[in-house]
Length: 120
Image (cartoon, rainbow, N blue to C red; front, side):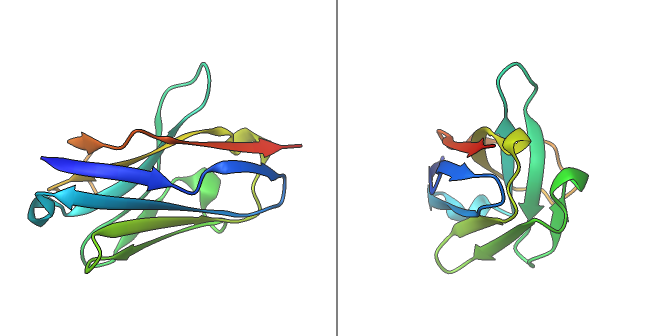
């Protein structure tokens, strides 16, 4: 079992920045890919960014150049620096982990989510 705790969400004006954090505990040896998903009201959950143990990253086209995903393997933590935020980025952001690589869509463990609200 892996437990994930996200933090860092909040309310920010358009153009502002937020940094999300996710700390993993438990069976962390099983983790390779760590990802950020988001789900806006009335929309499907979508993959925002992911990173593997080797620090390779993948981003959704909508956030490329605005978001930076980083990871600290020693702390079993992943971070999402979000810059130039847009109102359409308003959503609950979830951290998730998988033993697979960046190509996987099979994330096993999920955090409780953190709300990000971007005002116009």
